[in-house]
Image 1 (cartoon, one colour):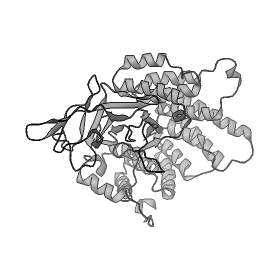
Image 2 (tube, rainbow, N blue to C red; image 1 turned 90 degrees about the horizontal axis):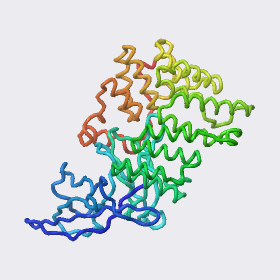
Image 3 (cartoon, rainbow, N blue to C red; image 1 turned 90 degrees about the vertical axis):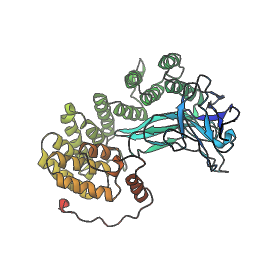
Image 4 (tube, rainbow, N blue to C red; image 1 turned 60 degrees about the vertical axis):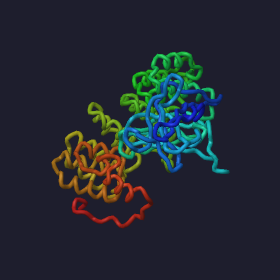
Amino acid sequence: MLAAALGLALPAAHGADGELSRSLTLELMNSKGGQPAPNTPYRLFVTGKGDTILDTPSGDGILHGVTDAEGRTAQARTTLPHAAEDFTLIRRIGDGPWGHFFQLNSSGNNKPLPAWPYIMTMRQRWGEQWVDLGYTNRQGATAYFSHNVPAGSLSLSVDSPLTYDRPCFDELDAINRKYAQDDTQGAGQLIAAMRCAETPRQRLDLARLLLSAGQPELARHWLMQARQRPFPDWLRPVDADLLEERFEVERLLGMPDLVLADAEQIQARQSRRGGPRKSGERDWANSAAYYLADFPDYLAQAEAQARQSIQRFGPRPYNQATLGWILALRGQSDEGLRLMRAAYRELPRDQEMVADYGLALWRDGQREQALRLWHEAQRECVWGIRLHAAMQEAAYPHPYFQASGSSAVKDYRNRCDGPRTKGKIRQQPWQA
């Protein structure tokens, strides 16, 4: 959980044409205070003062770069004089065309919340993946996270056991900073010296951080460490919450054998409890089935899990669609499409449903039907990470596949980002 704070601003200098130029120092906060951030990517712009930084590479008034060995930015030229507080300077992650940062303010007086711990996540195919953690800067701003997924969904968490555990949070924060500076060796030294890598949950947190830092193999190592149970721990059942958290990390790390093993263990516990199924109980069999369908070598196990879901929860649109998708992948297109068509009628605005059904039609050669399905989804503003991947495979011309600043994207967002009233769903020919 890193954030940038403004500080140590150098005096402004006058340019040849009356313009002013200054450098600022990126300062990162933690629970003990702040310090300059050397060799760290940053994002700098004037904050709502009727002025802008001149001659930025893209002409948008936003300066991107990497701080020097003292944490200083490049010179920023402006037309008007500005104090350091007139700028927003934050750490930057990634170089994608889509990005966002959050501003935290007090609900009592709406003042910025500086040095506040946070975890930023982005929705992936298989769950919420950490993309950053740190502390807000003096203006209450998080780091700026940019990526290549059109309008990807970002979330912010400031209320969790980890954010309240400041010593352990600071350890992860320090490791995250090293990776941000491309100091892999320094990050490794901090990991080796960690005090908060003893319990399974701490190791899962470290695995999540390493995945966000682009270290999936090291993340898998710590996931496996989290699964280790020395004597006498192995004599006791794994805590239910820990088992479920482990399942989620395993999905993000692409470990289908472990996902299946933990899903079956959770389901066995549900069965041992006996009695009627609880209201709101999670369908772990369907979760495992849909995940395993992404791995060709696990399609038989995926089908078995989907049928287990139907047996325990009854035929529902979501598990019928899962089974239909798996059958289509296994070459049983007629039965698979029949199940998916019935499920789609019940959930026509679910982005995974729209993506899978449309892609199954596309792969089956029924491309006009697939296009009509996706045209309707575009009209109804249905979007998500799974639909993004399906449309990419079919080269579907969605507005989001144009440049992020294009008029097509702006028109789509103006239409779809605001509140909408749900109207009656029109019956389409392919729904018959």
